[in-house]
Length: 224
Image (cartoon, rainbow, N blue to C red):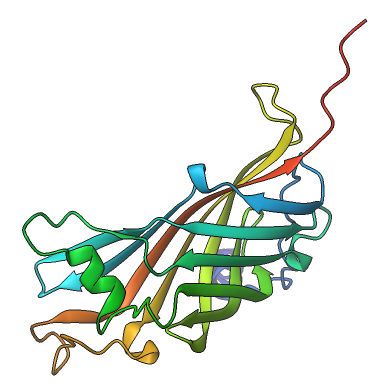
C-alpha cells in the first residue's frame, strides 16, 4: 500500500511540474465606444502637446507646443481602421524660461525647429494595432524641419460620448498618447552628448499628448 501511495504522489508531482500548454490568445476585443463613427476635429482648447528631454542629467526639461490642429477619421466598429492627421505650429514653443533672452524664439528659429523655413510639424498615421481593450500602438510618419521618419505612439482611449454630457450638440472622444523620437534624426544636433550619459541635452525626446476630438451632432429632440 505504501508503494502504491508513493507512486501516486510521484505522478501527481510530475503532473504539477509538467509544462502547461495554453491556447493562443486572439487579438484584443476593443472596448465598446458610445460615440458615432466619422470625421472628428481636434479640439485645441482641450489638447496639449508636451516635449521632454533630459537636461545635462539634471531634470527632464519640459516645453509645450501650443498651436495644434488635426482630424480623426474614427471607426467605432473597427478602431484599427481609424486614422489621424495632426499639424503643430513650429513657432508655438512655450517654455518656463525667464530672463532677457527670448528662449522660445531661439528654439523656434535656430538650430532647433527652424520655423522660418519649416513652419509646421506634421503627423499622419499609417497603422493602428490594439494592445488591449482600450489601448493601442499607432504608427505613422512624423515630419519635423522638412524631414520625415516613422514614429510610434502608445495610445490610450479614455472616454467617448455620443453627445456632450453638458448637452452641447457634439460627440466627443478623448485620448492620451506617448512616444519617443530622436531629435538628431531631424537635424537637431545642438548640445548632443558626446557619449552615452555624457553632459548635454538628450537625443531621445519624449512626446506626451492629451487630445480631445469633437464631431457636430443634431441636438437631442426635446421630451414631450
